[in-house]
Each structure stands twice: as structure tokens, then as C-alpha cells.
Length: 628
Image (tube, rainbow, N blue to C red; front, top):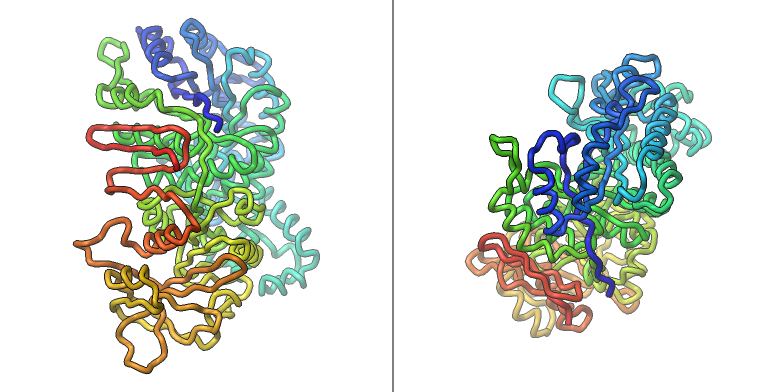
């Protein structure tokens, strides 16, 4: 299995060589502790302060000590956000700001539909490329828009009060409205077909314009709008990637993105990774903190997508992280197959009163202890956690949605997993990644019909699909069942917390059932359903109240379970959740092996790699084990 050195880049503010007295000393420390490059922000306004007048002096000065230390450069090229745009452009007729739908006010960032902006961006990128040799550059990071260069729409602004900014939908400017109208007319052809599909009542195309969730004519209309919103960001991003690949044909190029993929952000991590791979590029995801599970949720879709589509991935924190967070981030990067880890200089070093730099003792000790672990690896996932883009979009939620996060936490207490979405599933990831099990995130989520067909095919080919509640098709919301769910139009749901008993003469289920409680059960399942667990309170002779049932499809099966499984808190361990019980059953039956069961909650085990890694921070042990 291929294991290579990871690119480790340290983010330092531009002009650092003039600010600190002991530049050569701390650069040497970085080189000796796994750091391969320095990243600095290269803002459009810094290199073109006056129209057509290019100035690279401050970056030239920073490169001199980097060359002496033998460390390379990652320039973060940013154009479009307010704080990166030259005053001469902001004050010209060419400037066109994004406008929100909520208040019909402009923000400070340039609109991605501003046709005057892109020719200026091309000149900025070309001028930079002409000035610097690729020998000095490890990789190029593209800052296409957003607040700080991410491939997302404005979210928080740069500094409070500088301009109108908030999380919302930034497509109210004339260029965006016209682009939306043009895309929708192309998609549906006639106003009559649009009205039929959306349940709307437009009289002509002039009435069609972007709308908020509360104003959406239907769910299908909202899904279409967000698809266009994300596709518009992808199309603008493609211009940057295409130009960068033309200018740096042999260089590594990363697209910067961020957030949690909530609809207002306009991002789609798997499609961004797919687009980047098309240009031989990667994605830098910039949203980590100091929490292990949140970091995994926010980054794993990017790293899995990059692996699947043939690109690569980098991981960056959103801001400050704790010493424990330093170790957690190192684990997440090497455990997920990332090629690049970015860390902020200020997380590891501090400035003295004399203008010198020194390491922060606790954080630097963590970095030194674990730097040798930083390798790019190729994960082999036995389990995939599937998220419904459809459900998250309809609910205006992102990857940190409580339903997704709850399932992910339960699953990660047992084993590592690949995070996959509907785009990956529809593109054939399940057949190539070849997990043994797919766990559906959320209870009773709505999915696209094509995704549901892919899940059925996965089960028919020997896979196991685990679902809390019955998944639904977004296009048949009135239909309470699918043919392979084991439910029927007569299925009834009962509420009431009670104990669970085995419904089959199987020693495994008979031993697991007594420790479980459940708050919901169902009756009147179809003949296809094989009940494995049931509730204990129904009178003798009454119909079975099921809480866990199986429906076989081909050589595999679906496993459906009802809500709020629990156990006595005094006896709870990660292996007593309903997910753990199901995975243990599949492991015992030979369908999946070596899940990497954890001895306690303070140890994170990733059973995916070729060597053994121990990451420590204080008394926290984080371990990576070799599979059998």
C-alpha cells in the first residue's frame, strides 16, 4: 500500500520576514519537524495597488529566508472577497457586489456573476505566474470568492460593521437573477412545464426569480434553486481551476472551500472534489477545530471524494486550536488519506516582547511528538455512512445536522467510516469503494429516487444497509413504503418506551435483546419483513410489534430499526448501541471483519492502514491499528 510523506504547510502572515527578528531560527525548527512549506496570503490588492501597476516586493522579501531554510512556498491567491479587492476597482463602474435575497442589500464581496471581474482575475493570476519560478512553489491555493477565499458565498463578513453581511442567499443582484431565469428556462423549456413540476403559478419568465425557502412553491422548486446556486459556484470555480492549470501545468493546485455544506454556503464538497480532479487538482477544506467528531464530519466527505474521483485533499483549521486539537488534527489528516495538512503558525508559536518568535511549549511538544506520523495513506473503509443531500437541502442543514452528527458519533465509537453523499452513490462509489455495510444517516430521510435504486443494487450484490426508520423518495412523499422496506400501507407506528425481546430463535439476538430499550415500534409489516427484535409488552396472541426487521435483497439485506434505542446508562459502552449490536451481528456472521472495537471512549481506533501510529496529547491516547 502506498504511503508517502505528507505535505505540511505552515500559515504565516505576509511580511513575516520583516516582522520577526529570528526568522532563520524558527524556519529551521519547522524544517526539522516535518514542515515542508510556508503559506502566505497573496491578495489581489497587495500586488495591484494601482490599476496595471504590479508590486511583489513584500513577497520577494519573504522568499529569501524560505530559500535559505530549504522550505517551499504555498501562495494563497485571493480575488473577489472585500478585503482582497483593490480600492481602485471597488470605486470603479466595473465593481458589482453580491446582493442578498433577505434584505435586498449589497455586501462587500464581488458577485460571481460580475462579468467585469473575471478578466481582472486572469490578469492577477497571470502576473503572479510570470513573476515567480515554480521551483519555489510547493502548491498553489486558489481563493476564488467567499469571505476569505473559500468557494462559497458570503457568510460572516470580514470585520463587523464594515458592510452588510450574514448567512443567507446572495443571488439578488441583476446578473444573478438573469442567470437563474436563463438556467430554469433551459431546464424546463416552457412556463407551463415549470408550473407543472413545481406546482407554481408563474405567468411568464419575467416573474421567475430566486426565492427564499419560505417562498418556495414546493420542495422540488427549492431543490432546483439550490442545485442552480451550487452549480453557479462550481461554474465560476471551474474558470479558476482551468486558468491555474494553464499557468501551472506541473504544479499542485488546491481549491479552497469551507463551511459545512449548508444550502446558504452554495458548496457541494463531493462535486467540488470531482471538478478539481478533472483539472488534476485537489480541494483544501478549511473548517476544522479541536473536536474530533466535528472535524471528521466536516472533512471526511472531501477526502473520500478526492480519493474516489482521483484528486487529492488538504485540511486546514478555521482558526485557533488547542494543544489537544493539534493532535486530533494530525490524526484526522493522516487517518483520512489527506495529502496536505495546514496549520497556523500562531497555533504553535508566539511572539515575544523583543520581537522574536518562540514555540508554545504544550502545542509544540504535541507537534514534535507526532510529526513523524504525518504520512499520506490510502484508507480502506469497511463501513460507509451515507448522508442525504436531498434531506439536508430541504431542511437547510449542513453536515453538522444533529441527525447526521448523532449517527456519526454512534458509528465512530465503534469503527472508522467513509462519509458518502448522494452524488458519490449515484456515481458508483459503493461498487468501487466496496464497503460491506452502508449506514443511512438520519431517521426516515428523503432521498432521490436514483440513490434509492443504487442502495437497492448494493444490497442485492451482497451488501448490508442499516437504516433508522424507513427512507423515503422525495418524489413520492405520499407513499409510506417502498417495495424493499418491509412496510405496507397498513403499517402502524406505536409510541411507548419498553423493553426488547428476541423475535427469532437465535442465540445472538436472545443475548442482545435484554439490555435494549426502545420508544417506538411498528406492526403490520409486509410478508417480506423478517422480524429480529420486538417489544415485550403486547398481549399474547396479538400481532407482533417490531423494532428491528430484515428484508433480504439478492445476496444482501436491509436492516430497519425504530427510534430511540437505549440501554441502562450504568451499563452503556460503545458496543451496546443498536448500531454496535447490528455491526457485531454482521461481524459474527462473517459479512464484515475487524471493525476495530474500542476498549474505551478515550481511544480512537482506525483499522485501515499498513502501519501502527500512536498520537498522544497529555493523557489522551489516539491510536491507529493495522487490520488483520
